[in-house]
Image: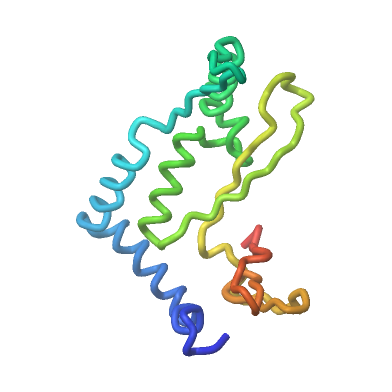
Length: 171
């Protein structure tokens, strides 16, 4: 990576910056207070979408909307459905995402979809959250033609668009 590019100037120092930011939130009241304030204001008591589907005539699809809202509540409140690690509800995931975003500058969430034969009618969507440190910054492999790997993210050389993420799954 070119040292004169934004990635080139940040990546060599990223591990130090990340550990210092985490230490600031962990050990300093002001750092913890800033992150807590964002968490309270951005997520609060939770993000609650409401279905508002209508027929072509403009009349609300009341039965559909009630069923969709019920499915959302059932999914969002159940950590076994929301989190691929089965430990956090949707609101807990959002609070963690805001914490990561304000602490290290990004939140990294992958969505997965698998049918749930054990729970008929359940939404098959689950979320997996990774910490910045889990990106494989030291990966030694050949990216796809026209791409390069920068700090665990495979990007298009031409456009800078992220094409793949390289993640350490185990220590």
